[in-house]
Amino acid sequence: MRKLGQAWRLQNARHYIKLLAVMSALLLMGLATATVLSADRNTVSKAGELRGYPAGVDIFYKGAMVCINAAGFVVPAADTAGYTSVIGVVEKTVDNSGGSAGDLTVQIRANRHFLFVATGTLVQGNVGETMYVVDDQTFNAGQQVNAIVAGVCTELVSTTAGYISIEIPAGSAGDGVTTTELALQGRNESGSDFEPGDILVVDHYDETTDRMVLVLADADTIGLAAVHLWTTRVTLATATNGTFHKTYRETGQNTNASTEGDAVFLSTTPGNWTETSARNTDPNGVAVSVGRVAVVSASVGEVEINLEVGGLEQIGTNEIQDSGVTTAKIAAAAVTPAKMEEGSVVFVDVQLTNANVLALATGVGIQIVAAPAANKALVFKGIHIVSDAAAGAWTEPSAPDDLVVQYADGVDVSGSIEAGALVAASVNVREYGPVLTEVIPDVAAALHLFNTGGNWGGGNAANTMSLRIWYAVVDTIAFT
Image (cartoon, rainbow, N blue to C red):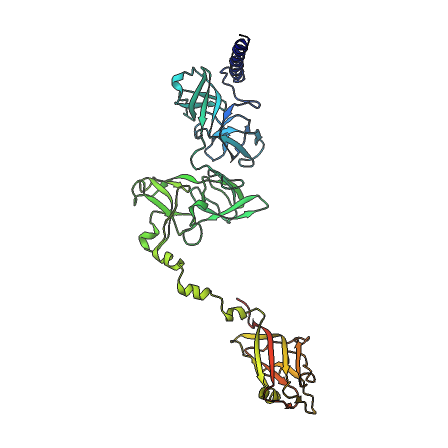
């Protein structure tokens, strides 16, 4: 019995705590007083997402409902003409009342069920119905003067309070540090004004102003990816910061050549759209959809620019073919000895016979690296010599007979290579580098090994001299 009594008391205590929670919530709600916030508000919410939006010139109190105004900036919710439906609730107080529109960013939470005050009498039958904005903390089941939607009633708390579902508008996911799909804080540095409806693309980021810099997009050179395109809703002078959007209704247009719903495309004229797809004039052209014709007229036509749902409409067969992988392209990209040689230090191996060695003082000696192409030069880097005279020693004449690497015209590119060790009856190894003084490369000239004195004597038919020559091929004309 004692255990049963404890369980009964515990159950009653839980019901009492729940009742206190509901009563506290109602007290916090102000019991249906429709007053504009003047301080932070503890707004109860359920599950959702957080996004940043450029702030209008106002104070945004924590817990307030917000809309987007006609200029594209977030504002405290109100029954004001030109405002969008409520997009969410302020996460943290932001005061932009002393700044300019877009100076600050407001963090907005949405995709949740929020508890707000209801004016009038809220009844169970209102659950599932659209609610309308009275002010930034109050809604009503009936349409107000401008019918600004607050959300959908999802739960009745009392006749003066209820949860409303506030969702982020479709396509408003953020895509940058100071960006959402609804708006981008950017800058015009083009040298001329941007006009409402101009189609733009981000060109670069400006560190000084902390803004993306936009330029007019066109179908010839830039802006072929619609996800990167933006438009203006107001005139923006050059060297000025502003807000750019994904959508805009352009009025006063000549759309007489189209029917309602037809796509319009990014034009080759910078910043413009055209009713003519590239595929209409060029079967292999590229077309980018940037909107749809909304009203057909020769003078008062309207076009709904929508850069969130546009994109690449067509790639012609030539473009696909040109970008395809072919045997010729693979061959052109392949690494070849000639490509490896160009600009890199490479080597070539040459073996001289006994007869070659005995003739090194004749004419211009023996060619050891072939001449490069026109407007190219060989730059000598070093030589490795293995002299094998074990079968029979070579003999030096009385005149100086050291070896040297030189261009075909006789300009030395190596230091003097001492002959004494190379003629001995054994296998001798020597390595030499380039001359230390300035050398002007000869154009399209071969490298030779030359004996500076008379030809050697002696030797044996089995003797060899093995050479490894390091060199690079360089341009002798200005780079392009």
